[in-house]
Amino acid sequence: MTVLEGCNPSRILIRAVNWIGDAVMTTPAIGMIRSRFPRAEITILANPLVSELFSPHPYIDRVVTFDRAGRHRGVRGRLRLAAEIRRMNFDLAIILPNSFDSALVPWLARVPVRIGKQSDGRGFMLTSRYSPVELPPLPHEIEYYCNLVRHFGISGENSGLVLQTTTEEDRAAADLLAMHGIGHDDFILGLNPGATFGAAKRWYPERFAGAAQQLADMWNARPVIFGSPAERPLADAIATHLGGRGLNLAGTTTVRHLMALIRRCNFLITNDSGPMHIAAAFGVPLVAVFGPTDHATTSPRSNTAVIVRKQTECAPCKLRECPTDHRCMTAVTADEVVAAAKQIAATCQ
Image (tube, rainbow, N blue to C red; front, top):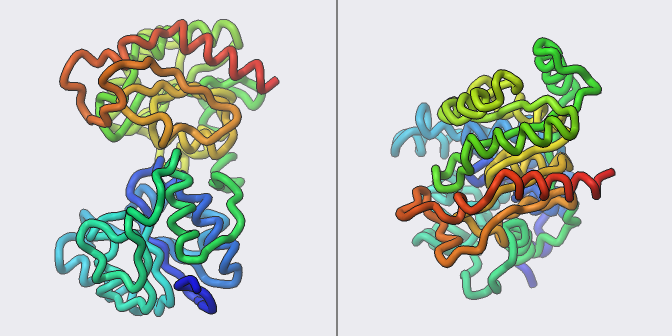
């Protein structure tokens, strides 16, 4: 008998993971939860950026934002959040992250059933748990999260990556592009040079620009550069190399705006990052440059994506900063990315 056999919760709390890309990769597992409990009210508890990803989302009825830097900061903040959660009368909490902190609030809120991985010394806060030795190593993060919920008897349908934008958001994206002379029928080549995890994951601005120039000439495309405010210098460097040919939107978009703009792209060149997974969820053809991260576990789950990487003795090291010569990235050339783009584009025709 599984822990949830005979359980019919009316209110479910899902504690989301903390990174945009990881959150996109949890959507198949969240879809399984929705399929297993179609009549339940499902609330997701997430940090401000991930909250945007799910506002709205077809599997989620309500979003509660965990403001770690504001009202939920520190011990008092966690107690305040726990009190808020307790008033919502959840029957079941599904804790997707592995951290102690992610299990703390559902425990303090006295959610009757709390399930998740036994890790980080938090087992006493879970009413049912699984040990890492109970599950074999999995080839991809998506399978990890799906197997996690399956372990507790949640065996609903896995429908793949799912994100949603609204009609208003799509219209606003089109209006913004039109303000810069990019029309509905123009081919948009998205460029995503950033990667929040660290500089080691970032390919070089001049190579992004070199690949973009070749592809823009080939496809008569309009390059559009994305990025966070902190990544604006990378985007500015690409824009400089493009000689004003590209539209630089880095630092000007919310997560919701970014989703709609990426959805509008005809193609994307990207590092291993959250926007890469957003593009995969929307079926945007893409080339992803991988260096220090493990392409086997975090690759874009899409039939219209191709990875460019070089086998080196030190990769994947999974470090934020390269301690040596960044050979895993310096070895990737603009011509190789262009060739990969042509290859995947040909399969999409």
